[in-house]
Length: 250
Image (tube, rainbow, N blue to C red):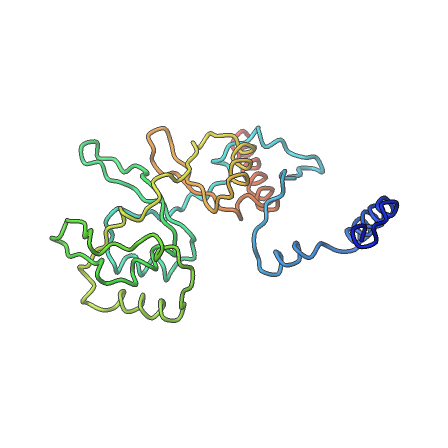
């Protein structure tokens, strides 16, 4: 308006009018963006978590990430059966999965990276990537390019029919896929005793979708998603852990 009217004297009144209108609107309703996030069920993390206990805010520095992590984790190996992957994708709604590597000498399974549900869909759509039990070589000529993996358009009906076929058809019983070329080996992890407050800050600052929790030997202990860090979820899990601790002491 100032540019159109060339009247600099109207700048201050217009700023005051906009500020008053914004504050008045916030008193009666949420903003348009907040309403769209709620309508689409998108978990949104506030700049600072507000978790109350007896009407007093909890200090999240006093809690660790293991207090709120999901302990029932579905992990994948570097080489997985096609039928097992199809069953996992059909029976769960997880957006990402930790991938572990079996160390034969130490007889341990350590975290090596993560892979998303969309990437697994892309892999299973290409039967040229399937290997047999005796074929241990990685098919370099059949790998999916980064641009193909990044495409988000997906026919959910087609992929569900394909997964059901992989799960029931005997032809795919002994077929495997090598996940090594497609996993994110730079995936973030934190130790189970890491501060919950700092975990929240890292999660929100980096815009993560899921975060794997490991122990000192890099074994997968749990996983955290955006929904786990929302205020009401934090409140429920922290109060539950606090009650369990009190019961254990008594």
